[in-house]
Structure formats: structure tokens, C-alpha cells
Length: 119
Length: 112
Image (cartoon, rainbow over all chains, first blue to last red; front, side):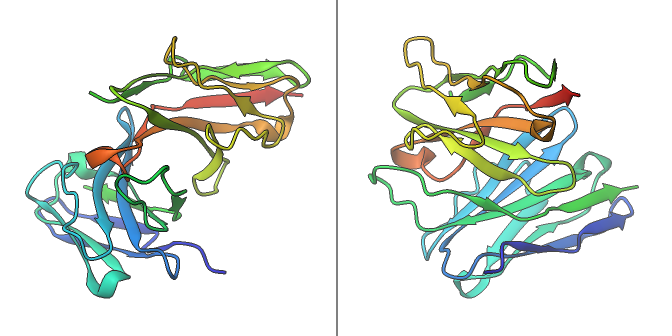
């Protein structure tokens, strides 16, 4: 079946503009994650959605970053008033539910990423 | 605090040589450890995880709780193993379940 898809694949924007990045998870996956991959910082966790539970936003670097997940499927990551340091590859991943208190973490499947360049 | 350290940013070996990619972690509890791989122009994908105790593409990794390490090993490297390798940790319980903590990655190059 289809894997995780992300759009756009590349985005160039000017400093101060807002951007929206989209993620389509694997059908049936209730958990969705956003990560950021940047030079010198490696892969950083941003936000995690699990079913209808409140998202774990603890990795968002500032209040300019927000994300939503509509209908338990597609997710949009929004960056307002972009800064040059926001330039990075933004990765989305999805998995089956990982239950707190459960024995193990479900495998996360990653999308191809959106490469964001802020000029 | 959770932390994953991959001390080698770059690693080069010749084809047929053994390879070991190092990973150390810190976590108060019983974590789950993973190795992810990203081949050129491909997406990040799971290579193996410690709970499955499998050998994938000839790679193995043993969780050493005493040394808090999860080194990735292969006895005979192949050119197609050239890729970026990331070690990752997930908490098995509580609020850290779900998110992955990644190391900064090791770029492995296998020369012919």
C-alpha cells in the first residue's frame, strides 16, 4: 500500500512569510509525528498526535509553530513568520497506536520530507 | 534526560571489512532502542530494533544496559550499506512513549 506522503517536496519562502506543510499518513495509522532534520541539529521531535488524545507539543521550538490533524488523518504543520533558522527538512511519520503502559513502541514509517528554505 | 550519542559523524571501511557504528544512550528507565537508515535519495526507514533480536541485511545490534550502548555491527560490509545511520530511543512507558529521540547520525561509506 501507499506509504506516508508529504507535500510540497520543496518550499522556498521569504523571511516573515507563513508556510503550511502537509502530511498524509498511512491509512489506519492513528499515531502521527512531526520531526525536523537540520544541519548540526540532527533529527528533532516536534509534535505527536495519538488518536483523539491531546497532542504532545513539547518539541515545538516556538509559538510560531503549530500543527493540527483533521479527522484523525491528514496533518498540517504551520510555521508563522518564518525565520532563516527554520530552514530544514520536515519529516512526518505515522504508526499504529502506541499505548501508554503497553509493551513496546510501534514502528514509525517516515515520509520523504519537505525541504524548507527560508531566504 | 533522554539522550542518544553517536560519536562518529563519518565512518569509512572497505568492502568485506567489519563495521561497527557506535551508539550510547542515557535514559532513566527501560528504553527501546532502534537503528534507522537513510540511503541516498530515499526516506528514513527502520533497520532493526532491539526487542526483535533480528539480523537485518547482516546487521545486528545488542542492547548493553550496563554500558548503555546499542552498537550496530556487521561482519562483512558491502558497498550497498553506504548510507546514513541513526540510532534512536523511545521510552517504553509514560510520556516518552511515542516520540523518538535520535542521535545525530553516522554517515557510513563502504569503499570497493
